[in-house]
Length: 429
Image (spheres, helix red, strand yellow):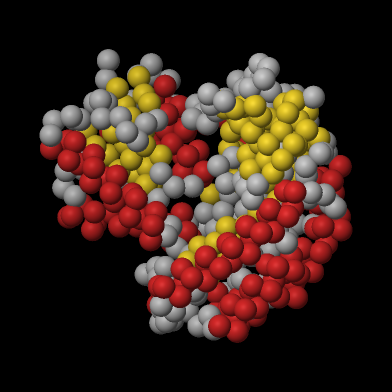
């Protein structure tokens, strides 16, 4: 039997695309794996990321590594898909001829045909999952209608397209039957869900219906947009027991000067008002945000304003990117990349130093308190889990000494005994 290795790079949205492809392959009883270090497969499919410079570099290096494996006779077929392939297909064809074929982000049926597999439309509600079996990502839309000056996603993924609610509910029910307890809703912009097909925002209705599915114990929301925020979702987060008190909402900056140049459609006043309203409506919510430093025209004054914002808002979770110029974006075409790389990195480091102290102080307040913790995995000495305020891969973990047997995927009452900047330690009650 042939064996196929699917290598998933980049964001969770790419991960879902890879899982959907695996579902088609699995329906034919063909052996497959998700393993970026596996050179034993007959066919390798690399699902690339093309969002920022570091992600592009990782994708190119991975392609080159498997191109060499093909030259060495370790693999027979090499295919590349995803965002990098969508955007730079012609250049990649010239530079890496060892790749048998390049596909775009919406070429699932073409890939399946290339693999000599019958594409089964009826599998759209099914999913092979590559995450631990107790949680899965649910992609509720594709593409984006926003025109942020730094972002190439609309060029790569196209305009916003919501997935019909009935299909999402079908997927969620199937995932629950497989033992998935935590659904992580993802999109380029959760806030926009429903506007294209239902002519109004439908995020709150979707989440309410998902919350009624038997077996789903946690629903988590990723990537809402500040402008035109769907305020009715706050009631759902507050009232539904299985909707996590958690919201990922990238603000990018706080200086009106920078936000205007970024074409973000929200300003400082709206940003602060939104944060205050979220915290008033859901007092114990954890807010995760992402910031972008070094955008063209960002002055020292702008950066000082950003630092003050981070100190004042005390976000529970925060990540920072440095600006990288993207061709054919508004920023790449109209602004000079005038902030030196060393200044960008220094600013990112300074923001993370501030956030590290904030995170430490917030975590110290959790010592002695009891949290519901879902167990993700185990090591030789610890079970490792998360509270409802933490998302996989990017947020705090709870480490529980292996003093008694716990089951991966189960939720336990854990008392926090000590805390560090980004880790909690606890014991089962």
